Image 1 (spheres, one colour):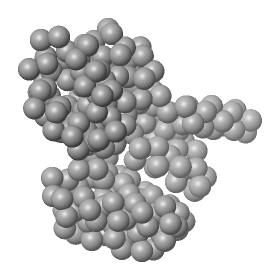
Image 2 (spheres, helix red, strand yellow):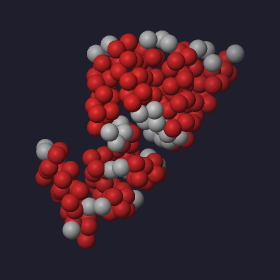
Image 3 (cartoon, one colour):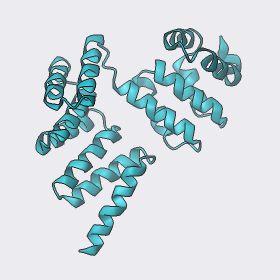
Image 4 (cartoon, helix red, strand yellow):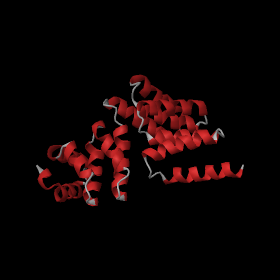
Length: 217
């Protein structure tokens, strides 16, 4: 087991095998528990914290979400970045490979600006697994791109009801409220996002702009 001297061995393991993600996953699973990695995530050694966040992106389960949320406030920027990346990855896993594949199909449709098709794809995801928060979040994005504001807000609210730590859905909710001219509601949603993840620079900037608009009235 590598966990007897995790700092040097974990970073070496990731560095040596980063080009082969599947191999790296198997090595991490074989040599580290989630408890090991969450402990390393809290390390004062920034390289170890970053490595742990990277590893949890690959093999972490929902059990490590509280530790990753805490790591969003780490002193080290790289650790914060890897923790956020790990959260997005974990949130994209429903526990059902077929559902996860559909979610990825929908994301690709979003990238290709096929927004109505993306809505249909994410709706299938939701119908298959009604408790999968990321299905609603991704459909909220598709509805936003279609300027279907009420549907987007509805899905953002469903996302945070299922996953109260979903800073992305709170940010998305704020974006919709801005489009609707509901500045107070937008500020509240943005603040909720920042409470969870203080690293959302664009959201912090949006809060400052909106506060300035309110002062000018």
